[in-house]
Image (cartoon, rainbow, N blue to C red; front, side, top):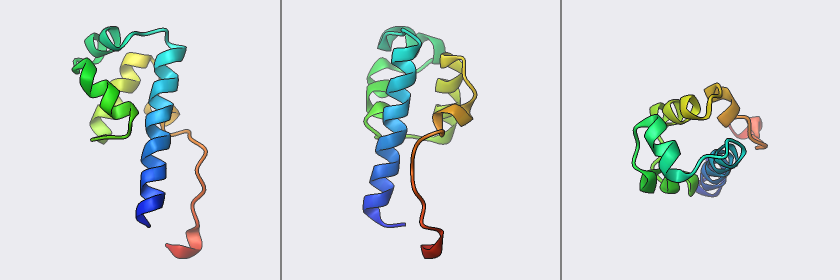
Length: 82
C-alpha cells in the first residue's frame, strides 16, 4: 500500500476515534480512566499516531461499542493493486 494511502487510512481511523469520543460525551481524562490509558496518548491516537489493534479494542470497550464500529470508516481500497 502506498504511503499516502496508509496515512489517509490512519488519519480516518483517528477521526473516527475522535468522533466516538464526542458522541459519548467523554472528556479525554474520563475516557483515559475507562480504558486505563494516558489522556495524552488518546490525543495521539486521534491524530493517527501509534495506533495498535489492542489499544483500539480497549478504546472500543470504553466507548461501549464493538471494535468494528471504529473500523467503519469511508475508505476506498483498489483491490486491483493488491
